[in-house]
Image (cartoon, rainbow, N blue to C red):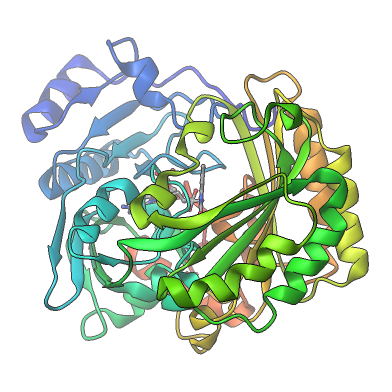
Length: 475
Ligand SMILES: Cc1cc2nc3c(=O)[nH]c(=O)nc-3n(C[C@H](O)[C@H](O)[C@H](O)COP(=O)(O)OP(=O)(O)OC[C@H]3O[C@@H](n4cnc5c(N)ncnc54)[C@H](O)[C@@H]3O)c2cc1C
């Protein structure tokens, strides 16, 4: 597999490691030690890399020690939050992985409707704390995704249309720079850094704390999915597009063209067959939502209708069981300006051609707009605010077998669909790390501004395992 790069890990001397251990509270895991095999791995097993060290940071002091150590040894740093990077940015060959998973504390101030969360928290941990107060912010549609990578890359979820992207809710952040210095970014302090962190990814340093705005949500929302037979995909997609055209912001939906898993909530006779899931979240008053979601129940002949009142935290964890770690995964995406009949036909055709079980080849069509589209372009580094749709083409196989063919299918489908937009990808939904694709994900002026911020905080590009922004050259 192309993504499966692997090198012999660099071996650091015993004395060097012993000295580092005196400066770290969390475990220092080097090649050959117990736990190294597990520590070098991330969620996506298409990625098989061998870092020189994995440092399980216990707090900010460990992060500073880890960055300073990497500097003194001349090693690059991979930052790991929830480890969901599809491109494999949270591990590396020969560098230092700063694993933040033990830094997962979340503190909520219900009065000011703000949460302070450590940089390694997942959405499960975040939602658990915030929902105790009936509050939430835009999080991922799987609870094991890290709030760090998700928010810094934009963050699209069920609350996007009502409350904006996750990065729009980032009020301030605490970050360790490439020099090992702790800085704060807010509207009043290092405002350019805050702007860059709102969509520019993990390029600028290790974000040890995120302050996120919270909003009243749930505890029950109207959510779940209506499933339709795969041969009705074109009809369902076209009907969905028309049904949501003027939907209120409280409604966020996503269509998933997939193969029915052998799950108890689906009738046995559809297991292994092509199926269409129209997933939705209505984050308003439940009785008002019933009327709004009604058309989603009548886009074809439903196989099963599982859309109803559901606790928000349950909705956020609904697909966790089918998306566990260990498989080979690839995502590629495109923002779309329109979904005319040829686009609908292209998606329906790709769906029919997709590999079935045990592979999971899916086409997700996200509904965007609402609050996300009302933030001024240029106000944040995340720039693709106007397109009403985003497609994510997903290839997933239990092992390496069949992965390449399915990845080629995902890439081909993305290419066939790109003409319905301006060609930009969503940095959080891309398994590629080519410089031209990163540049193409941002308008030229946004990229230039990001490059200037990068040059200020990480001029040597020590944090290069990300959708990498090259530091602007001085002069
Ligand atoms: C199963 C699955 C479901 C997903 N669902 C959604 C979804 O609903 N909506 C959506 O928008 N995206 C979704 N994504 C994409 C997800 O947002 C990105 O993969 C995101 O980068 C993951 O963040 P992480 O912290 O889990 O990953 P990691 O692999 O730990 O990190 C990803 C990137 O962010 C950087 N990073 C992480 N934490 C920090 C930090 N604290 N400081 C600095 N840099 C950091 C890393 O260096 C790396 O470059 C999903 C991905 C997967 C695999």
